[in-house]
Image (cartoon, rainbow, N blue to C red; front, side, top):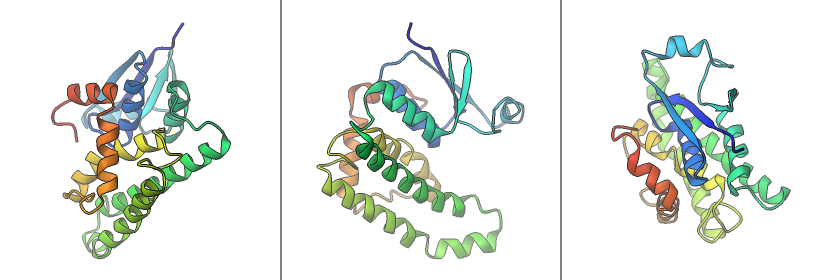
Length: 203
């Protein structure tokens, strides 16, 4: 019997969106459970590590977005064909983790002077990573790794809407291969169907 999945996350894209894309891509039996800020204090007490996303698989809860995404990728055929291909996917995913950490470190800094100082070279830091991603796509026939669609592409594309909202600009301008990658992932039929139905205000 196929497992029943329930994704618990905030009512936004960010780190929950790669999981939603993967669940949709695989046409798995899943429920999208979303929380607003008012619900979070009580919900947090129920989370294994006090954070989300978490994935409920047949009544058991599992945490950490990368680990969940890696698991789902195996279920839906978006892992590499061997350990070396999986290593390359992991490299791309963790490079994206470095990228969005730079954005988050600036965006969520509560100290105005510190935040302003980080903003001075934020664009240069972001461009460093974006150039690396652009090179990877050029070298891999339109994808980040292995010359084919993998969960690494999904983990890169799915949260972009959220991070663009944080920096208030489309930072993919000037990176045509990354823009094309976004189109490829988002036009995949099952993912496109999910995107068409997700909440309109979802960022």
